[in-house]
Amino acid sequence: MSPSRGALVTGAAVTAAAAVVLTVVVWPDGSGSGPSGDTASPSGTSAEAAAPSPSRSYPMSSTPSAIPAVREHTAARGPGWQPGKDSSVVIAKGSQALADEAQLIAKELKIRYRGAEPARAGDVELALGAKDAGPAESYKLTVSGRKVKITGPDESGVFYGTRTLKQSLTADGTVPEGVVNDRPDRPQRGLNLDIARKHYSAEWIEDRIREMGDLKLNQLGLHFSDDQAFRIESKSHPEVVSDEALTQAEVRRIVGLANSRHIEVVPEIDSPGHLGAVLAAHPDLQLRNTAGVESKGSIDISKPAAAKLIDELLEEYTELFPGRFWHLGADEYQALTVQNPAASYPQLQRAAEEKHGADATIEDLATSWLNDRADVV
Image (cartoon, rainbow, N blue to C red):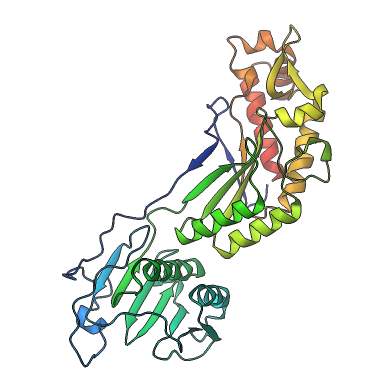
């Protein structure tokens, strides 16, 4: 297994998840300062220092409207910011890596992108800070002098700053004067989408990815194989693919869009259970007990051809999904749910002993099956 990629493996007999599970991780509760502006900035910047020098008096600003709520906001007096006819998005010197993020927010706000140019009044400037300037995915958004500046230690953080900017404009028509310091409270925030039990079009999935990006989620689980269907085109084993399925070109488009929103796609082929759609095309690999009764969705892991089939599918899809993680399932393997697995499935018990010794169990065999699949991805 590549050192840069992990495999997610659940317990061998865990109850299957619901068809679609949404986990929205709200960063912390909205603890930004209200109109009183009494939240101190981590950098020690005072509210007055964050404000421009207006010729008229402005009330203290309120916290920007955003989901999830921003962690900290230092209020200030000033007009805030909203795009005008001469507004543009620029990137700071040495921040060329932010060109994609800059062009995206410029397109969303319907203003120009001017590249690496000095910021003028009315502009939004994106800048990368030092890597140790803050936690991963954090950002600082400053509204002052009729300009916006978003900085962060990495591209993800700056991107999330643009999401706060976009949300505040959408909700209130302006971005309040002052300084936002924001960061997530956990590294994985995501949506798990079961496209095996129900087919979703590529366009529908792409719409969800755009929403996820705006909500600062960073992981999309794609469960595309189960008893009901197998939902992604396969060139190595086209016989397992359901009539309604995503093409590989659509998957590449989905993954590309997710990358642009700083979302990692985690694919899942569940095994050695939940393989009903695959086994419909390969009935010779179906697990059966001593009475010849099929174990629904379970593949016979004592057969070398079973491992070969699943490995060929995994190898094919690793090119489509280049992220760090694969989900290998591992839940509800029927051989592990009966009272006496060795008596019901003697072929599995023999295979366990041959591979792991006389004291081995079918659970040992199932565990080694998953470790072998992890080595593939």
